[in-house]
Length: 270
Image (cartoon, rainbow, N blue to C red; front, side, top):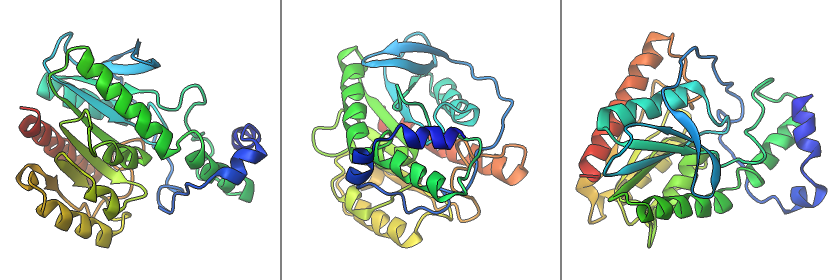
């Protein structure tokens, strides 16, 4: 019912123009997991965004931006942001990139009808269109710097990984970026990077593409500041909305990847 409503709100012309498709099968089929975590941050208007989840100290030298997955503000994603903020004593911002449309409906998910599947693919071509959201992320990074942040980092999940890596090219406002179980993974995107990257894919991302990216990063002038780990025992989404933290292995790797993320930003935002 909800998916049908989303589908109807996408005009026929938008459907015809849609050129972005997510080929990550796991991203389009693994549902989010219910969590009882209570986020520690607050929602407020920041920059051009009406709604931004903000967590961390009242003042901090640097700032970090989180680009959520297709399910938007989800407790596990906010829990990760709280970990990054409290450990680094740095303010973390998670803007509502999907406003005013909202995230893709999680109930039911995955879509099982042709109409629902088309609605999901159209979501990636409209509300979650990478190109328009890359521009939003860059603008927000510039806003934080103008507002006084000495250095700004960014990290993204799923479709947000694509947005984050593509926002780290020439003239980027970011000092370093990270992508975690990224959808639409492409070695070509990493060719254009001008700042360090930490990449943490799951078994559901193409390992060949990951290895190409690691090879490209090794030739960059900032190679020593980059980081990577291929989580061959984890599914797409384990560190965000699809993370089952009642599962011991998932919880262990959730903690592991956030430890790596924190250490990466501690090094690159110093």
